[in-house]
Image (cartoon, rainbow, N blue to C red):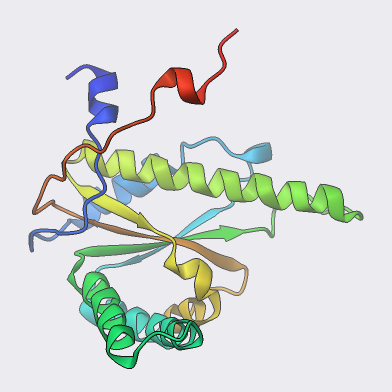
Length: 199
């Protein structure tokens, strides 16, 4: 397959087969993710990889507490709150692999002023995000599929506590990964002329 065609064939997949993903493959895709570019080459990405049912259930329970609080604050009916929480729990438990993508600022440059410190944090966030995309493409190269979920941004404390993460690891995203049970249709992309200025 042409490389551009391969890159364009990646899809966000939410339903997986029950075929397990080997540790060798997991380590390979994580290593490939670390070849993403990063600010100052500080590599601020961190990965919490969950493959066993107890760890995934513990994460789902921890995130459900924060999710419930937010949904109730939004004034949603109780039945809808319960439905949304159960859907979230089920997705986490059903995924063969759950990867919590974290950012670690401990090796980034400190600045005395907020302007540069904010920019430094943004660079670390961008670097971590690039590693997340690289991981999804590496999984795609292995015949796996995945989806990026931002829910940990709304519950960083519960996620960290549920997984006993180091205090410097800040959850940024959750990648659900496995062998696909479906191939979603391609969603329309905006044409280049609408989203780029080429001079």
